Length: 235
Image (cartoon, rainbow, N blue to C red; front, side, top):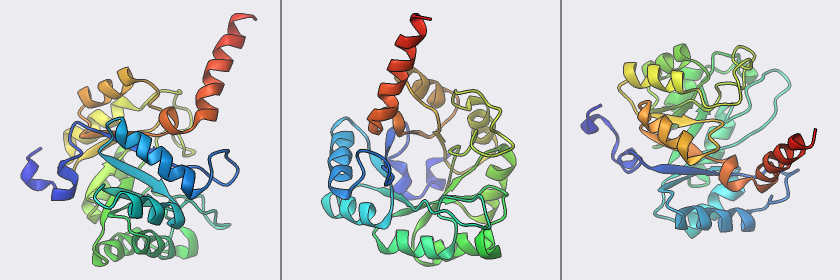
């Protein structure tokens, strides 16, 4: 991919780590003060950008690190849709108003709340001055996302939709390879990346950059992986 086709804000992502720093209300590290500290630790460790959930956490992190590119999203349940990540115009407004530079948007083919349409959401974010990261689950969604105007594509939702839940607990390197081959916008590997070796394999598969979240910023899940492995040896 020619770097001239990549928006300036995204160019620093190339070959680098983005860290997802999130905690939901039922998690031990929930709270903006803690999120800011985890963001600081991630940046200290070499992350060049952050992916942050909720308007309060986005605004807190942006206030502390104003020059760090911030990918924002809001996770919210709706009774009429399975879409969970920045599902409607409402969430897009909240994310951008909180200070995010990039809106992470579920761009799967699933019906959206309130019968809202993806092209309208993408254009709304662009009109408000933000870039759009398309969170997709398969190849077709990635191709469609690029056609709709997404500035980058992330494999975030591979393994998390009904059509892809059969995938094993490994990153979807094949999806990264196919999208990287056929898309002119940056393709970012995200989802189930637990080791530095897997992050390297994602880059070698063609990923522009890599997002790692749980393996860095969700200690309860990290501890569970160790605990499960140790318990398995005694069976």
